[in-house]
Length: 174
Image (cartoon, rainbow, N blue to C red; front, side, top):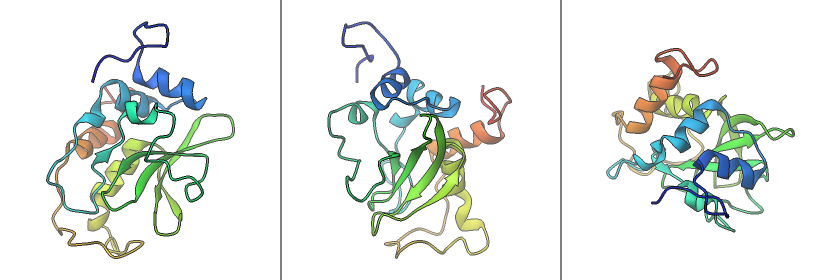
């Protein structure tokens, strides 16, 4: 993928292009997610049910992104990372255009539940939830999901954001 540019051909960042298209303000972890291109670090051999399939900014910037499910997905959700089974971790926008929270959106009915204040928290929760009491409960049956945790690059990034070096607006980054 090439460096993002504006319509005038000037170099810009992925986060600014997304903010412009969706009239929103991204949180610091999402700015880092897009501009540091963490989304490129997808795991090829992850078991089904793990959130490791990121939507590229290029996909989000097309006229009709395939990850957005009209009529099922509420209009204030922007899908960010999928689990290869149709479910998504989605950014939820507040009415003022700010990044409100990240939710787990279940494709089998359009239900959603909050998983974190930002993408880093949601990815970290997705990574460790199996070890929590009742962590094996989910929305629907999981096809051949592994019991062991896959140490994904997304989980490493999320851990660094949430519990790593202090720096970005209360989530710890850099």
